[in-house]
Image (cartoon, rainbow, N blue to C red; front, side, top):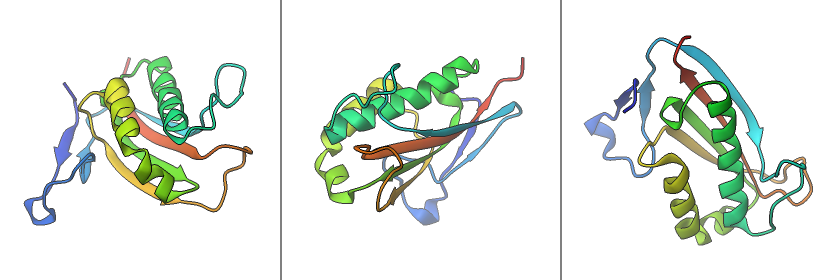
Length: 135
């Protein structure tokens, strides 16, 4: 159960797969740097878009958990993709991997199509903000 209050004004309609706002409870702010589909050896796990999304999100979750937080502490995700159509084509795989890692927790999110990412071959980069419980 999230400590944070989900804000979804009726005037905006029901969001699908994200929240319009999150009012974060007291805690420590964690800013998660953009994560790509690297493994522990900093090698891309695949050239498949859905696999890259899943690994990038898993890397974000790993940072949050390393801070003492949980996925429910994530308040914001920004997903950068090099090809919006590839994202749309992989939605079924992306949705399954998302639910596997995040359950039914939907932070605020933005999807941004970019011309390229720093690492050659990377198609997805995800950054986030979490408010983790104070020690």
